[in-house]
Image 1 (tube, rainbow, N blue to C red):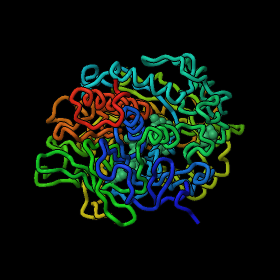
Image 2: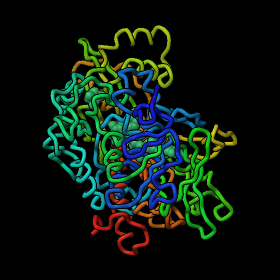
Image 3: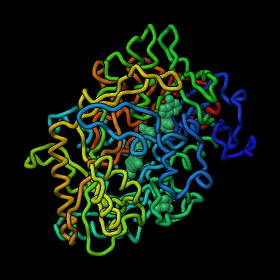
Length: 553
Ligand SMILES: Cc1cc2nc3c(=O)[nH]c(=O)nc-3n(C[C@H](O)[C@H](O)[C@H](O)COP(=O)(O)OP(=O)(O)OC[C@H]3O[C@@H](n4cnc5c(N)ncnc54)[C@H](O)[C@@H]3O)c2cc1C
Ligand code: SF4
């Protein structure tokens, strides 16, 4: 039977390393300086930086406080529980697959089951309007994020090559690159070499040597099932425990249902539900870090007489310009066994087709990741996304060990028609279920054709026979974009909402464009910069009660 201090028990709050089965003795029950909704990539970094600076921080997280050693299994089926699996309604010409492929649920958010591929955005990613005449420029540049990229890479000991050939940062990474690489990645690199395409070992938030009491990767390949040995970084095992050490309180299994605004138009805190009971968390500043679907859902659902169209939504942009990456998986069959289940799924990369080359007939580009798959995931995707059934499905799964795979991570341009809106159907918390509408645009489709062709060429160059393509997506971004103009954006360059001064929105939701590579390092860099801004603002006006002002000087 679980005890009051059992680390495995799920329906409980988290308090200085121990768990309690009631919320009456909350640490900051009267008032917190800062309430963060969502303990994912952004929420974890914010909690760490702000609690370290001396703020009374409470993090409210809808899902459980996982214990990797007892809760994670090397089992594809059971680890679907790491995802946000609540019903969401999908629409558009290219409806998105939700669930395991998108959001996490629980302390750590998506970082618990992400693949750990860790890239910085390129300078061009922040300036699409200026450079290519499409979409919009971000209100920040690469230079603004550079010190935060650097800090985070060091904080978590990112492993990567001595020389990374693309973008403004070309290595070396804090920890050496992973070796040996998987057979799938080896084939990818050889194929690239034959075609004169540069490739590199992927930068990973996965340890190549011991760090911070954690062991290096043992290559079993269950990264998307939550890393049991703790070799893969997540905010669950890194930033959140450190934040708790600095005094932060984490309330897990607590679903935030409303952001509350007073008559003066300032946010007073949030209501949340734990074990069917409603609570209120008062805070001087509220930060919503609930990713790209739940953030706009919460803001729209929190509409009140003063903000009838939802909070922070005077621009009408809350829920608009949802982006994903084209995540097409390209498979080829080989004569010899490849065994794509072995090792960290991604260990080699090429960003040779990342920047705009007008001769291709589209703007921007993509990253090609040599990418492994586990059998259940592959079978499910064949059926649900590639429409492959019956004998063909049987044949592919029988020969599973002979396939190699490349996944393209391609830029999708923002489009206001791609959106998150509220339906008339309510969930068990009384919040309307979201409708997620998505269709690819013309540029996106051209980019996909190019990426699939290049991947097939690389696979063919080492003797692979192109077999099938799974038209997948991954990495949601947008719906509360940042910008300098309050009539076309939701937050400013520091993630502060234009409409409500003590409401911040900080997660992948604030992305203006999607970039052509995996986004989490950028999510975390933005969060660290937002934390710095909040700290600096507090220093200036002294209005936020600090516990230990000495750490601020
Ligand atoms: C299978 C998979 C593989 C991936 N691989 C990579 C990769 O290799 N590299 C990479 O860069 N990115 C990868 N990603 C993407 C990455 O996970 C996200 O970019 C990142 O987690 C987004 O961070 P976030 O803080 O915006 O949101 P999340 O990390 O999703 O955090 C949001 C948190 O908010 C909580 N929440 C939501 N609503 C509420 C509410 N109402 N009340 C309380 N809590 C709430 C959620 O439970 C969640 O914990 C992958 C994602 C998946 C799913
Ligand atoms: S392959 Fe490495 S990082 Fe992935 S789950 Fe196994 S030990 Fe963790």
